[in-house]
Length: 105
Image 1 (cartoon, helix red, strand yellow):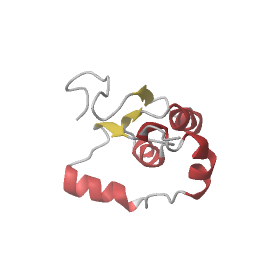
Image 2 (image 1 turned 90 degrees about the vertical axis):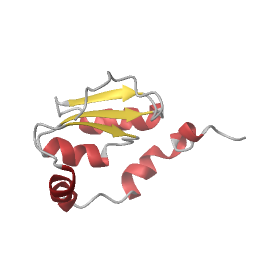
Image 3 (image 1 turned 45 degrees about the vertical axis):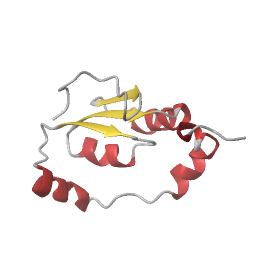
Image 4 (image 1 turned 180 degrees about the horizontal axis):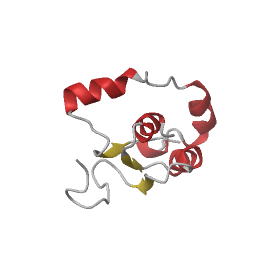
């Protein structure tokens, strides 16, 4: 049975959490120098999954919209990031994020 691309990881969320490598914290310094990231930047993490990148951005003090088309991955991200009040989980895709135009910077 062929699954839609947004459903491929539905049955593997816990393995994804356990085995997916984290980004190095130095990615924040790279984003600061190359993309002018500041603590005031509002970020759309498109395809946020379980929140690996979102967590680093949240720890940097950013407001983050975690946009995730896969329900199970989004639920895992919600569970892992629920203690960050500046995180908003959004059920959406790259083509249809559902967030307001110009709401991220």
